[in-house]
Each structure stands twice: as structure tokens, then as C-alpha cells.
Length: 392
Image (spheres, helix red, strand yellow):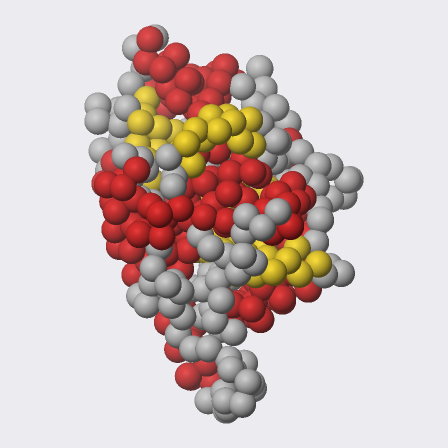
């Protein structure tokens, strides 16, 4: 292994190279572009045995990657924001076709107005499509999870595509030391590509035609749901195997920080989890027993892992960097729904912050949590379940 200073985007590119991706289809968009630029450089320099397909749009980028993967090779693409929305039709086609494929999403605010800073609106807009979706906290996790995502999605218990998300600029353009594993180690870890079927010239195979039996069509959707549920075990197994090879275990679907004796829990995902750790440490020095649940996988949603930690909590405070307008933050909606379904009567609050790229510091997070905890300690409940937080 070798340690190099890498941006999050370059970490994603190195991971695709190490995974022996054979086709990269790409269309540039800020802040994703340097991922595919780096892959193009690898290919041109002869460091990567792959084909770069330069297409006319993001929709075509995913369509080309989908076609390549359907033909039996490992494929990769990446995008952000409006580009992901332009891909949205193909996002559903890839999942519905049960084709393993990996895509990096550099999360970026959606317009209008035009805005290149990070929030999670673009990636959370894909949560109902049937893709596995994980969010990275740091650049090492970007590299590791991209490699692991190929193995998870190509497992016969899953056979679905996967997204690795990283926050724009906070990770994508920020340099950190990243441990790059040897090619031999990745080859040992990642077996030859597997998929449910392969399109071959001359072979008769029909996929995606109009269904004659709508019950069977609905069962296909149920099967996607069941495969995402089955993916939970695969994610944990792959995390354990990667940990044995590299020494880096992430905990599977979630990671819990200072949770063992916590009375109040913060829930969040993405790069600002690092700030949440500092906020937890700050609050702990003031005698407030706060724990942090880092959601690594949004889909499949890790309800069992979250519920076992918060079952006896005094409160749960969910931070969202996107909002389902007219309702609440999507991460909060998942957490609250599963708490209620499990009969766990814990006060839950949604803090909407950092949307449209508004800066959020660890002091801001600590301030919002401190006020929320004080209220629930005094009254046993929250006076309102949702708060738009703009900072101190």
C-alpha cells in the first residue's frame, strides 16, 4: 500500500482504476469533472485498460455505462446535481434491469438559482429508484467504498447498481492523505464480474418490454426491495472482509460514535459527520451525554442498527442537508417512520441545515443540539418537530 494526498474526486478515480473498470462513460459537470478527467489520464497514459466514452449528455453517460455493463463488463460513471436529474430516467432503467454498476455522485445543490455548493438534494432524489446509496465522510472512505460497492452490487444476493456519494468541495476538491491499496490486494478482494444475464450479439434476450402480467411486474419491484434488504448482510460481510485485508472497518451500514452511554443521539450522513464528532466531544465536556449515529447507507435503510441504539434514548435529533418540500428532511422521515413502526416513543426532531451550501460548523451543530436537548430535558418533548437552522 502507498499513501498519497488525494482529493475525494481523485480517490474515486483511483478506486475505479483499482477495480479494473473496463468502460467509463462521462459528461463533465462541476464539481464532478475531475473524477473522469483523472480516469481519462489513466487510460491515455496506459495505466488503465479501459475505454472512455465521451457522450453528449449525462443521460447518455449513464445509458452508455448501462449498455456496457449489460454486455458483461465492469462500468463506471459519475455526475452531480442537474446532471443527475438529467440521468434520472436511466437511473430507474438500470435498477429495474438488475444490472450491477457503480456511480459516484458529487453532491451539489439543485437550481435555480445556479449554485455549485453542496447539499444532499440530488442524491436523496434517487432514494426510491432501487440503487444502493451510501455517503462518505472522508476521502479514504470514498476510495474504500467505491471498491467495495463493486463487490456488493455484483453479489448474486443483490445484483443492483450502487451510488457512492461525496460532498462537493468539502471532499471532492479537498486533499487528504489516502491509503491506496496494492492492485494485487484489490484483485484478491474483488472477483471477476458477476451479473444475472449478459447481452451477446446473436443471442436472443428480451429485457424491458411491455409486461403482459402486471402482478409479475409488481413482483419485480418487490424483488428489488427484497434484494436491498438482503444487501444489508452483504454490506456487513464485505466490510468485514475489507477490514481483514486493510485494517479499515467502517461498521457496515452505520457507525456509532460515543453511543454506549448516550442519552441523546444525533443522526447525520456525509462529510459534516466529522463536524458532528467534534460537536459531540464539545457537548460531552459540558456533561451532556450525546452520541452520534453516522448513517453510511441510506439505501438499504439501516433501521435495525439505528433502533437498537435509540430504543431507550431521551431524544433523537436528525440533521438533514436536504428537504422533501412540504414535509421534512428525507433522513428524518425514514428515522421517524421506523421508530414509530417499532413502537419506540422517543421525541424526534429534524434540524434542516446546510441546505444550498450554507456553511455549518461544529459550533453550529453543538448550539442546535444544546438548545434541543435543554428543551426535551425540561419538558420531555420538542415543541416543534422541524427547525430550519441558519447558524448562531
